[in-house]
Length: 143
Image 1 (tube, helix red, strand yellow):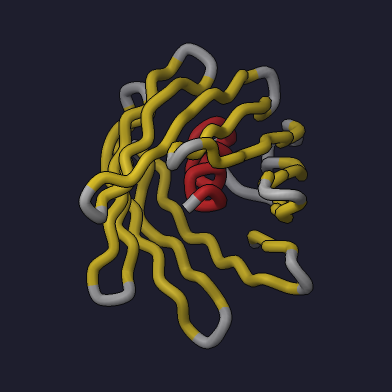
Image 2 (tube, helix red, strand yellow):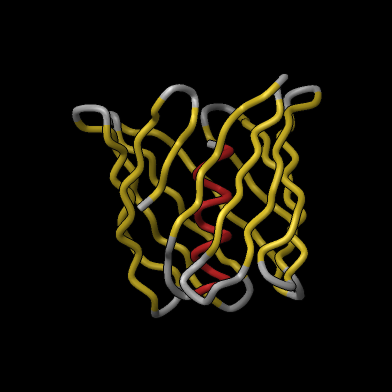
């Protein structure tokens, strides 16, 4: 879930998608790379007492979110730059559905695994989302 939230935040701020990789070290997930606009992506996520905190920057936008699970639904709140983040995610029959808002943009995403690749599709505002990711030796690559 940590990686999915970062993916959505990157997609929102850039309007497109380029190359980001995430890896975990000592309980913290680090994501870095660039978006299509050439903005640097640098975030970290960690869990504390059941809440996942994500902080960092995407271009010149500060990222600060927190996520927690309640009765099978993950709720994410916080901000990206001046935009408020309010999303919820839940699993149903092997697919993760994420809905909510990032600023004025509606978020409608679904994500599922197939043969080692995770497919993420949907929309954020007027922007279509179509991203694939895979894990290799502890690092997640998005393309």
